[in-house]
Length: 637
Image 1 (cartoon, rainbow, N blue to C red):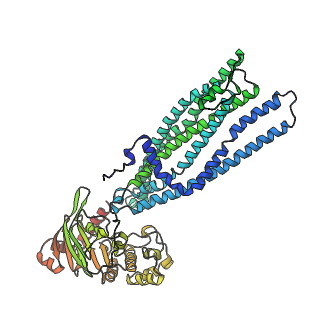
Image 2 (tube, rainbow, N blue to C red; image 1 turned 45 degrees about the vertical axis):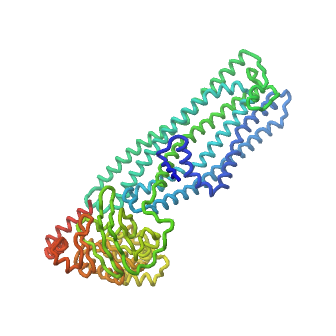
Image 3 (cartoon, rainbow, N blue to C red; image 1 turned 180 degrees about the vertical axis):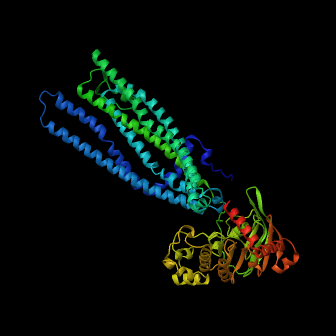
């Protein structure tokens, strides 16, 4: 059976594109069917005012202005009836707009959660390509513009119903003049469509520019220390100002299109009304009697009508005032229809950008029949692993075995592929060729949760949340109690400094743990890994950015953490891996040497050169300072 290719939104055009776009949004309104029906019913009742007003004017003129002996009670009844109509309209309008807003807010919340959920479950390679600011903009700003999608359809139906009801009133009173007034409708529709398309274009441009601005803000605020260290505050402000000026120009163009809608619709509609008024006055002055049956008009639609309807020019005063009141009121729904059409184009631009998010698929996927991985009991094996990042091979024919409880160290120059080796085990990325197995089971055949639950990770740049120390330590292990958290902190040599914080374990440590030193953050991360108690441990240069004293404290904690665990460690300081069971020396994605520390020293290869270089730097303070400065500059870049 041939598989039908699912077309992406950007591959569709016209009605198919619109239908596909709405198919993504409408399901989020289905849980609120009752609210949608309530809003639709309220919209219907709120449209009854205008035709009721037209009929009331005609009746009032007939029974008060035309009668020779009018009933004085009409002087009281008519104003009271008008008050009743106004009260009915304003009440239904309030209920309609309030319930529509509630519906919109609920849907926006669901959509934002759906977009957030989708982003969170995408593979790590997605985060390599899309910035944090861009994702924040799409989650918050783009989705918030979609909240009126279904209410907008109801709005459109409401204004269309109002227009049709007024049109029927006009036709019943003066069909010929009504048809003449409709000459302006195609021009109004054409103007609305063209202006709406402009609004859609400027909306998409504005959302893209807003994402660019978000990216700069996120980078500037996160990198505030670097900005200040290089005295770049004014330069960053200028960059921000330039981006805001570009945004302002787009907003000006959007506003010009948006606020041109109403005047354009009003002007064209008013020309139609003016034309009808001129013809009506001319016919009245000519005193031409024309009486005809309305059947000629309604028979077109299959409705036999046997009463006479005045075509022109014998416009009785009740008909004259009622007809032109209805004709004048028709301008509002025409203008509102144009406005809704333009607003929908604005929303459509946001829908397209949000659908782009939903069309992104995770590159690392769990098989439908994936099994639960049992706790590791034997070994981790990399078998002829290749990995390609874009067009460049990061690993080539990479093979090794890590037995249970062993320490395997990865050594090599920057960019040699060490971090890639570590990232493949928890399936942050999938191998291009070859396979990785745990106890003989391919990691692609097990559930992601069961795989990652067995792996603890401590990286060079520890990420901590803007939360309490306690919550950071038990992140990923919410079932643990405070006693277990304290025990893990003690094992990580973190308990004493935590007690020295203002609120101890309840201290908020700031964004990315900004209130802690590098060594303190690392020990919090080690405590987190200890609390998780995984059989497999991945260390990514965990002590490379620390000073000697901090490194000593962290290394003690790491020694506790690695005990009885299978550990794969990226080593920056070779002195820390002298006792490794296996050292892999990597260059350009390939293993060029492997063995224990003593074996590799005797080989006099790359490992010995790296080791002697580090020893020389350690013994020479001046050279150590130069290397530290170069490392800092590289990190900043």
